[in-house]
Image 1 (tube, rainbow, N blue to C red):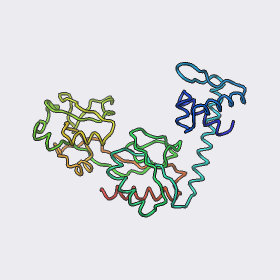
Image 2: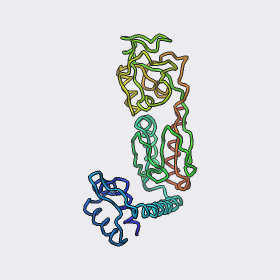
Image 3: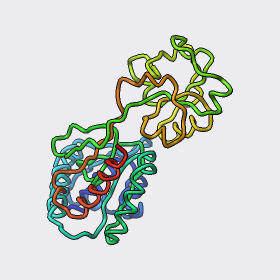
Image 4: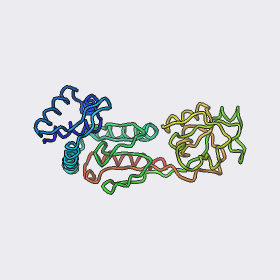
Amino acid sequence: MNWDDTRIFLAVQRERSLRAAARVLGIDQATVGRRLALLEKTLGATLFLRSSQGYSLTAAGELALQAALEMENAAQALVSRTQGSDQRLAGEVRLATTDSLALALLLPALKVLNGQHPDIKVNLNISPQLLNMAKREADIAVRTIKPDNPDLLTRRLASWPVGLYASKEYLASRGEPARGSAFAGHDLVVFEPHLHRQEPLTLGGESIAAGRIVSSHHSSLTLRSAISVGFGLGEVPIAIAERDGLIRVWPERQRARPYEVWLVTHQDLRHTARIDAVIHHIVSAFAAWE
């Protein structure tokens, strides 16, 4: 079982279809099917059950999966350790972050980087989904959740207090909510993941029980945009809201949890020159906001 066959086997196992596996691998579906059939013939075992629900592992496939995952981990370690010794200020760096942080901080930082090191190409992945850093889906991540994987190096870039904000137009037409009113008579803009927490949702330390949620967002950028165009009241990190021109409501209050931003990379890449260069410019950009 060679590495190319292993990649195809793992892609089919994860995606549950030849078409989806081909899309992930960047090859055509016929090639995936042909290589999988050849692998099963070589091993003398059927690895997948084919059904209308997709491909599922057989007992033999479960055994093959263990070996395939070990091979994948070894391949990733080989790449990480080899790249980790690279002292050239050239090559690709995969950077994952959110749209909001990219527009506010990272794109300006990358422009400065490009002026100093034009041979470094940054592949910027903008997504609210967390990529698997341990599996090298990104070289660097700038995100709001600190990972607990001991193989990853983390650095806190920011810890911004969060306040309650609205647009000038909204406050002119609706007025400021009364403290203790639970936002009665007011429209609210919220971060969608917060709606699914166990504890009751609050904004600015105030229950939203009497308010009306008119807009919820998975993206902090669209949440800020919704507040800016007058959809309603919502929470925004103070450092960002001030640059957006939003009006702070109840300035004596702030959210109990600050808005934290973490820089994450794999420890095997800590001596890679191009990784260090990108990290330096990101750290400098955040420091300039303090």
